[in-house]
Image (cartoon, rainbow, N blue to C red; front, side, top):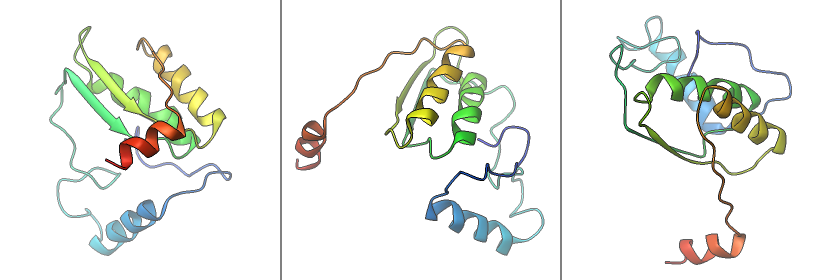
Length: 126
């Protein structure tokens, strides 16, 4: 979800190990990053592709994610009929609030459902 190319992370952001691994893979691949990849190291979707259903889980790790992801979802959503189902654990109240505010700002109607730790334990135990 690299909007406008890579950007320097905010000083307060902490990245996951997975992101470190991906950065190392891009560096190892060298210039061009493996053919057909964009500045973020992934092959872009064909221009204009839109989707009726968008699914995302556990995607807000930093403030930059909270700022960038709503714009990506907006570009990927089919006009006036897309449904985006997102699961966002609250690592940071500020990041989550920013993400929800940005979703609303780009035109998504935001509905929240919270689940308890007890519910998660019951689902995971199945």
